[in-house]
Length: 302
Image (cartoon, rainbow, N blue to C red; front, side, top):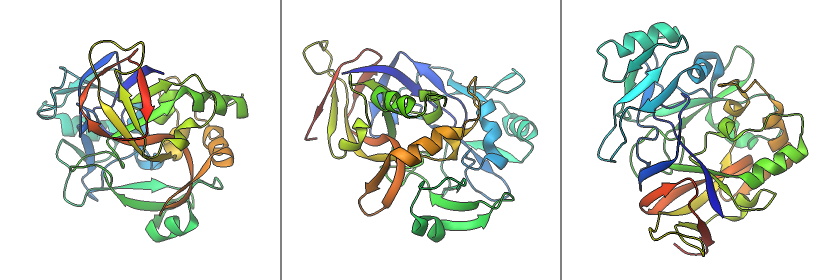
């Protein structure tokens, strides 16, 4: 079993950067991942493309760390705007430039505000989430008639952060292969799901569903090198949302990618109900360095 792709997303909901190696993976995740976010000046909400009418345009921006993060603090970030212009997180006018490009007043920050929360639209796709959860978290209705929920950020992260839930998200090539079998005309691409790690187990099927509570030990196995990588413990399957259907980079808008997951991989998450899932959330139980090509084993303990 091997790591095939690594990704870091320095600014929440913007396109990120593919990596060959990340030298710091610790309890905060991949160093530099979700280091920044935009705050809606009017509402105080953290901007998320999970509300496409307001924030889907963020997927037209891309962000990369201007220097390799050391985990000690937020790195300087280079942001490429949709018009191709390049700006930096430290620019005196960065908030004004972002606000003008987005058409809404925002500020870029590396410090999650107290009570940080994001909103999420529920598209008209059956089986995405438990009805009780949607009803219990609903705060308003979009102009499309779709419900909008509000959630606290980083509920499974050990520190205040800009993650939706946990510090790491992984996806297997097995899941992507199975989804392509189920809906050959849809555009299943790992980039839609914004994983930190894409790993190949040699299987086909939703193998991550069985990894809850198990630990992926990187730098282990018969073909491993001399350096032991991190241990990553899976907490739960990843619930999928409207953001996966949006046009981004060279990928078209494609609601069938989410409909397929909702039809074929609804998973019961203890205490949370049944959700449409693909991939898995995880935390880092032992730190280390990770690279594309690293081998790993799935074990039963931390």
